[in-house]
Length: 296
Image (cartoon, rainbow, N blue to C red; front, side):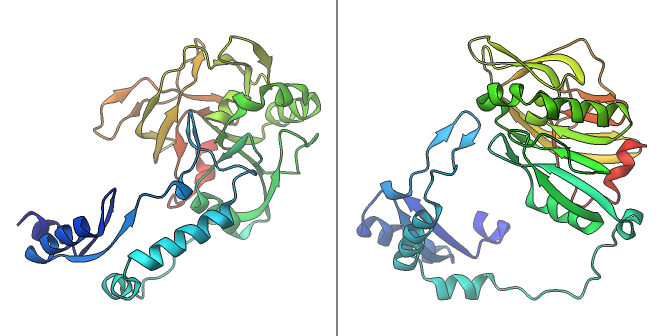
């Protein structure tokens, strides 16, 4: 009855066991009207290293080899034909989402993207491409900002590259000048840490950063904070998530109250200096009518 209620059409098992165990589970599925699609056995070749904010897939990770191993295991243990037959859907004829008023403008958008800044929603970047020309730059190595109407600093691991980020003073100045002249900047989590006065590593060693927000971002006494977040700012409803081990030391007031998924107030701040908006929340804006209204 439970499975009928949630309309389960099939299941793929992921477990440590034998073929006989799978047959037992498969028979149980048939008894309740669920299609057993196969199983994924434990395989050490599919392990992914992790670090304090999740999986570690960097330039040393052999992604192609991993994908090939995974594909061979899926092909061997899962009935792809049945899987596809049970998951096909007909696409509706709904009209594509209307892009906001900025779509017709030649907006220049700069996105920080390198080893230190790589936590971003793919759909968010696609949205930016619909409203302007997107250029990527590296806070680790580039000395100047691209010409921009909007700059986005996503999350990532700035604490792991704090020394290198700290030493790039020319870019610090370029970002500060852009902010002081009213440039639009959105910074999330690691991006906000980078725009702070300094980042302290887990041993308390501080590295000077851009200094737009007079606060210290610290990895000392790391403690996980996570959850879905929602808030309203400039009459725009915003949703996202918070996931970090660092903390911020400041006395700044938040420009709005944030709430968790149950609409309970949380102490997560959203900060603003001129047209620079920053906070720990990773915002999902792919379905927002006009992201740039945040800066009104």
